[in-house]
Image 1 (tube, rainbow, N blue to C red):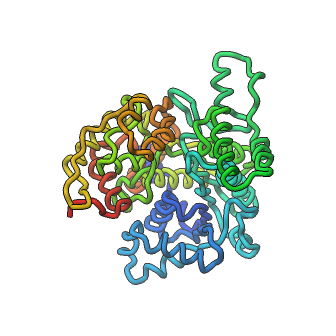
Image 2: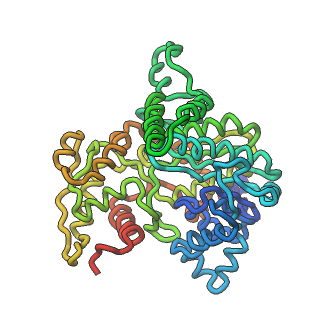
Image 3: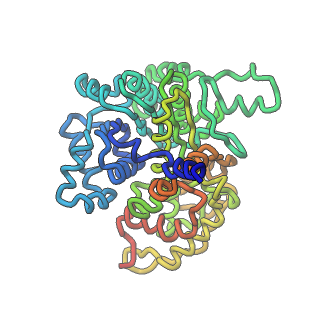
Length: 483
């Protein structure tokens, strides 16, 4: 049966992720961020013969960049599997692969000095732009500079790279703004606006609503800043971002500025092959390099911790709504599969991958509240005197009035409720057909090593046995736990 054998052989090879990544040179911006570190760790563990990985790091000089790389990457617990694997030669291995470079996506030529820029332009095959400001209510000028201007400066730099095979942008599924129902993986083009889309749904009348112009937004910010300083400037910029985002159909400055970043990439890419990765809420690692690793408070975590410590008895959410969560290692695996597939294809196209759970495996808020109660009831946090903190069943409130009435004391919780309301009452569900198709291109072995089947996650197991223990260990650093 030679015909079947040939077919089997093709499927066995899959995408060829490891083979493709061997010897490839990377430039990664936002290299000390949560997701970028999981990406770096995975590449070095699965493809030790990768080329140089240049890490763009904000620092005052080379020594300071080196110091940040050692403290925030090489010597962190995330890399412990690699440390065990390489033993005494670990530091030497890491320093042979990772090259810290002083730079900043907010500066032209990424803030690189001429010699470094030239070296990277001759060496790099793949650029991963992971630098971002993820504060929902950030100042508009700050957000625009990093999340909109950053991708355009990175793309300008990419076009000067002689051996470039692919430009990959880490975005967010929430660039889809206030789109409702099933939200497809489609690219943004210049002038797109969610408000315009929603207004014109089923009608041809669009002339009354202005087109979104990124250039005009940048000019507006410059004009508004004239004569303002200090607190007045900061306040004005925060309000302006929120106002402009809502005007055009996005829920906050963060996702609005990220969407405009995608528009600039699409507009500028020319013949550069592009992949845009849109994860939903990225949370702790599912399996690799070990379950539950995370850093900093991600979106839902402050609420989980306030509740566990007995400082919060409920939260403002739609009980039947869905929290769209994806583990960091699955996002990284999908990213590497997409790099190998499209880097090898070399087509000048833009490919969008939404890595999200709300369509294939929804986590409903009401169920999450029950899981949190079960967890903290069986493994309570402890107070300052070492006594277990008993938590009541977590209440879910539909309105701010109800929530505020129950929460007279915790100002921070009210602030979070306000900021998160567009997400906790979100009506969109992220389709991930492209991501599912990408998975089908993989061999069985690749699925084991680079799996990202969000549909396979058992939420009870992940939340109870992986995520909350990870939070307690890595974010609370074991404080408030029974010894």
